[in-house]
Image (cartoon, rainbow, N blue to C red; front, side, top):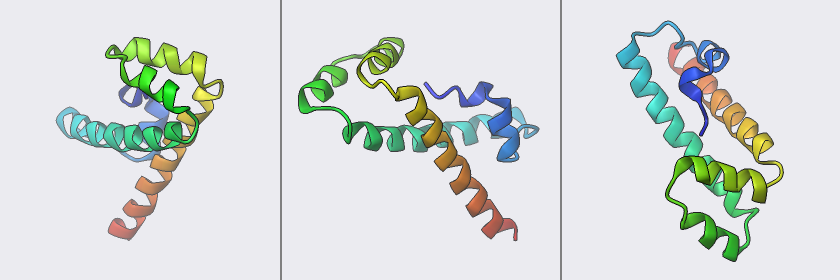
Length: 99
């Protein structure tokens, strides 16, 4: 849904674009998980209970993305916000660790 593995700008911004593939894959999986959790929180603030139930019944990721684009008009903006938040958190923690 986030396409982080294909987002070379994002990977470069957080400093892992040239990391070994195995390392990059592990990091991307963690980033996607974090982004997914943030997305769920943001969506829970926007969906009605009936919409949430309808969405939760969808098992196919492509169908879920299509449903969200129809039922959450600013879905693409929310995705951008989530990725920005994740990027800023990564950079903030990286600065603390690296110095």
